[in-house]
Amino acid sequence: MAFTSDLTIDEVLLVEEVGFEPVELVMGSSYFHIGWQQNSSLMWTGNMELGDIGRMMDNARRVAIGRMTQEAHACGADGVVGVRLEVEREGHNAEFTVLGTAVKRRQNDGANWRQRNGAPFTCDLSGADFWALVRAGFRPVCFSFGVCVYHIAYQTLGQWFSSVGPTPRCPSTRRRSTTRASSRSAACSTTRSTRARRPVSSR
Image 1 (cartoon, rainbow, N blue to C red):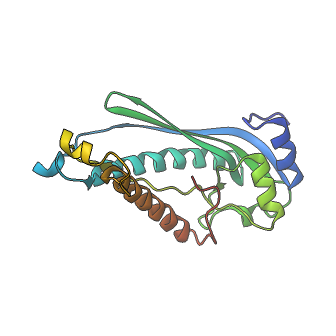
Image 2 (cartoon, helix red, strand yellow):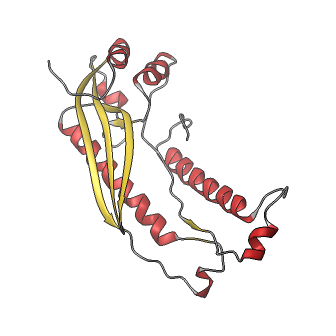
Image 3 (cartoon, rainbow, N blue to C red):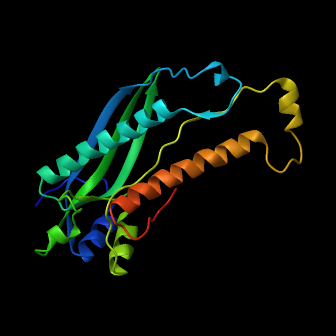
């Protein structure tokens, strides 16, 4: 049966080798306006997380992924592999697009591969990585992620020069580390909520 997919020929063969067949290329998207968050007079002089914008960016991704998952469910798929998220900015607006290849289990145990709520599993693993994961006795659950938007305070010229040189960690480096830690924490929280054993392919 004909199908659409963005997997390579080798990836299709590997996916089929572990008992799945590609069904259709599925997509979900959302279009959000990125507003302005005004916290206080510390906006330019203090380092802070922009919680409202971060929650919007998180929600925009979840809406797009949800729509892709609904499309996969509608075509009878048990999961989506090779998920990729693309973000395009245009002024204060951003479009979030999620694409992946819906796959269906050949045996009659497709329900065992779905999420607890009956939705198809989602993962950003390539066909080769998916093959290796299944062969090792694991199964993907969901595409998990974390979002953190952080404002790094304005620095005067003197402050900037004081951070240049063999300093252990400049303020910008510390703030970026904080942002990444917050994002990882949010992604791990999503992973725990699905009762997955551990995240893989972390970026």
